[in-house]
Image: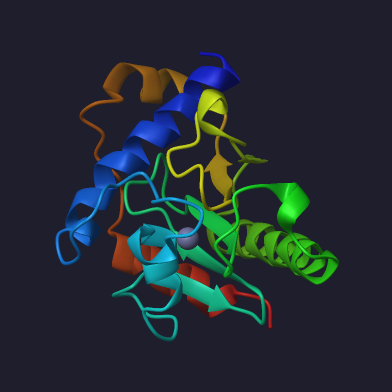
Length: 179
Ligand SMILES: [Zn+2]
């Protein structure tokens, strides 16, 4: 399985997950337009209150935050995002860019402490053609990996059973998240 296929899988998983979040607020699941953050699922998560197992938010900084992917490829699959509704790296302020990177480092440290993975996939799909499910709101994925897990994922990609609930994953990461 190539990395491209893996990332495309993430996109479809997340788009699928938006249904429940979208239910409360009419609108398309495409993240809305650049001027329409009220229709963006990430913006709604960012304004959903302090970190909790309910909203899946793991950490909130000054300009960025981290949240669990509601339909993870592996336990611990999370995303790091700017709070501001921006779609590209070039639009980030220097402060946002710096905090995004430091938040990503915290996320990786938390994943390592909580899950002891043998590797971590870290990256972003910039734009729709690259496979971004929510192209209007920049987000970085971090997915813990283990040797041999690709075969497992290929075989059961559509009927995946994760070894723990999102609430359990949230608690595990929340406890070790670097301050
Ligand atoms: Zn947004």
